[in-house]
Every structure is written in structure tokens, then in C-alpha cells.
Length: 278
Image (tube, rainbow, N blue to C red; front, top):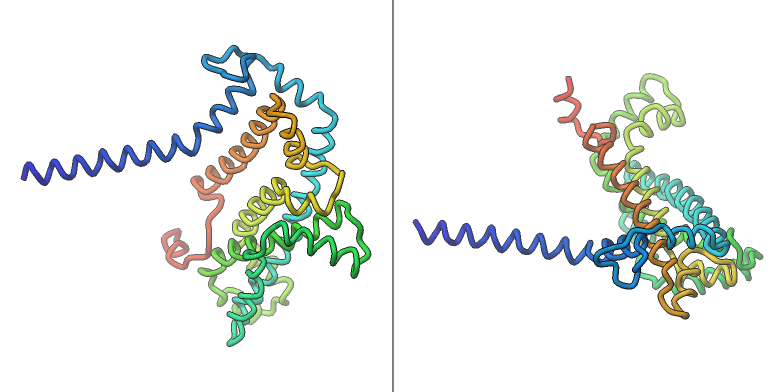
């Protein structure tokens, strides 16, 4: 009996140690960068001597201001297009599934296995030769949509996997047109999946370096500006830049967590959930 209790105690200690070590491994670099961005002694901020000098230098830098605007444009429009196209594709695959569904699904997720460098070069050549688009923001958005589409499709598919299509059939039996059925029945139930796909693809396109680098040339984005600054050493503005990006990402995730905890956002239509609410 004592030996069994000892094994259980040892297992709990090992599990707790593993969890703590994992969190330290994940978040210590982020914590270090955060301290350095608000410290006067940014090279070794222990203990930190608080100052906003590094943040002031970042926000007064015109290069980073331009790069931030370009990254926001690329992230927003890439996420919007990728989510819309992936949503339509996922609904088509699951609503009208047939013997070729797996074949179409394989084609949709194939860009996941293409290196981003190759995708950027291929998009540059294709957009220039066949679409007449030179390297600019529009061309970069289209290339990022190709990269983000597969991820958005998989995220939305997890939402639609539990969706009850009989709700759509019932609406159309009572006279609703397909567009009205989509906007009044389908969309209110699947919008959390669309929101999740939009957030993830926005972060991916916002942080992308390889694809945007080949499609934009000298036009700066935040990743390309940071990469260019690294050639001259780690500047303190990079600490502030990384902290701002991390804070925005954590804020978005915190909002989604609160929405899920309060029940404002649920994933998938589950009949048992509807029955429990009655």
C-alpha cells in the first residue's frame, strides 16, 4: 500500500515538473523580451530599470510605422479572402459529399506541403506572367491566401464536422431560399469557426516573411523590417516590436477564451447541447 502511494506521489511530482518545465521553455523567452522592452538596461534586464525609451524609439521610427501598415493590410485582406474561400469550399465538401470528396480535399490541403519559399517564387512568376501583376501588395495578398487557405479549411472543417445539415433542409422545406437559409441558419451556427479561421490566418499572413519578401521586394513589412535590422545586430527596437506583436496575439486569444467561457462562442452544433438548454 505504501509502495503504491509512493508511486502515485512520484507520478504527480513528475507530471507537475514536466508541466512547469514546458511552460518555462515556452514563455521564458517571451518574458525576457517583454522585460527588455520596458527596461533601460535592455541587454540584461535583471532587475529591470523601468523606462519607455525603447518603446518610444520604436513608435517614432517611420520604417516600422510603414511596415506595420503594410503588414496589417496583408494580414486583414489575406485572412478575409482565405476564410471566405475556405468556408465555401468546406461547406461544399461536407454538404455535398460524394465519392470524390477525398480527392478534392487532398487538392485543397496540398499547399500545406509546399515550402513557403517555393510558394513565394511560384506566385511571383505566375502573377507576373499570367495575371500581369508585378510585385505589390495585391500580389502578396493573393500569395498569402494560397498559403492560408488550407489552414482555414481545416479549422472550419472541425466546426462543420458536428453540424446538423437537417437544420438547413428543414428551413428550405418551409420555403426559405438557399441564400436565406445560409444567412439565417447556417452562418449564425458556424461563425465561431469562421472567426477562428480568420484570426489564425491573419496571424499567419501578418507574420509571414518568405512569401511577402518575394512578392513585395523593397516594400517593408514588419517581418522583413525586423529581418533587415538583424543584419546590424539585435537592436532594442526589435524587443519592443516583438513585445507589441505578442501582446496583440495574447489579447486576441484572451478575448476568444472569454467568449468561449461565457458561452458567447461555441464550436459546432451539438444536438445534446440544444437539448440541455431546453
